[in-house]
Image (cartoon, rainbow, N blue to C red):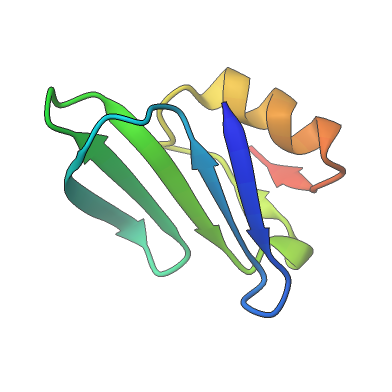
Length: 77
């Protein structure tokens, strides 16, 4: 799992796989899940991260929460 942080956009992209992108699903205005060609989670885009992240409905939720916590990002479960 790798993370890309864009300070200007206040966004994080958590990458789970390097497999080709197939499609994405918006959970809301601040959270998007991308899937690979096999239908597995490829990555998760999180916006407005400086105010905290809602982890409800995120795939691999426990792993994502630990990762965000380790990076000092507030998590709302």
